[in-house]
Image 1 (cartoon, rainbow over the protein chains, first blue to last red):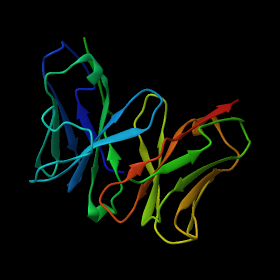
Image 2: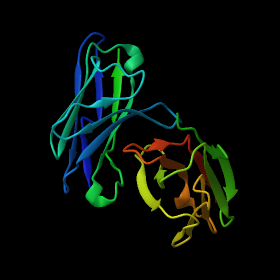
Image 3: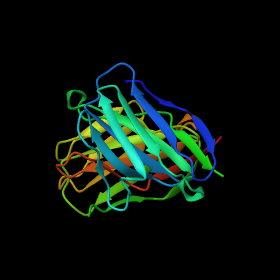
Image 4: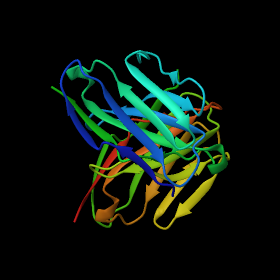
Length: 116
Length: 110
């Protein structure tokens, strides 16, 4: 399957600071990238969907001004958690998909964010 | 909104026993995908089902899509310790996004 990378894998930041997470599809062009949040032993909660070159579509209850998503190219999407608070601590996972690949989602390894 | 249930939530089996997890939707689906997430890992795509009544096999794994396209099952024959993980279904109702079920966590005792 396709390879998707995420950076960083772990990050610890202080409350009030911002953190940027990168998601890259390494060997295919992703027309769509998804950002999920996963709490321990729970399912994946979709935060937003981003298509290359257009604004992200956020799920209900997800603040777009707090979770800034940029999908600048077919291989890169970024999620910036602005003014992070301890309740933002979570596991953030991106996935990449393409209609050419049958809409299978290829997931990155995830980023563990801890806000102190 | 889209409601997706998976049963059971947890399953403990002895190595060599069979295992089945079920995914049920409140609405008719266009397609359904199955993913496996190992402990500490990320979800990995297993299969996509599109046609009513479709059955697909991958070695010891058998996937089935219900005739009404509202439910699906994943059956593992003769489980092995390598099957340990959480199995998620992800359903699509003719839209762009897939909604993930809560998952079934499988543990296999050697």
